[in-house]
Length: 152
Image (cartoon, rainbow, N blue to C red; front, top):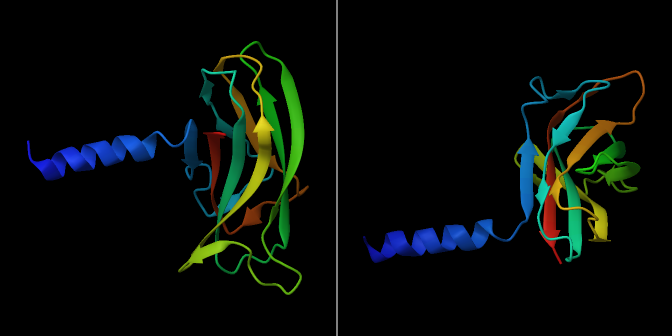
């Protein structure tokens, strides 16, 4: 095995171990639209409940989206079935209508923090269910939604 191949393997392992959980869902947005009532579901497995976690939501949208912000509802269901609901806001544009998103070409990503020093009370598989809070409408220009859980 070449030295180059070994270095690539080691680097891959190192980079993938930075996150406890990282998943981006683009399949739920087939027409670059987030349909009204469409739930985006993530199923992270939390093994170590002694640690503090930082939890992010990441929204991918097309350049040209005309929303200043987007409110989302996040329902967390623990392994034992306990439910908790919170609302978060993606700040897409500032007061001067400039994107806060990180854009590359026509794709833009913006994060919001869902938990700075979050403690999970149970180990096992959680369900994180995200819906948008704009009533009676689909949102055009949405390409994906991600959940990132890092250890502190």
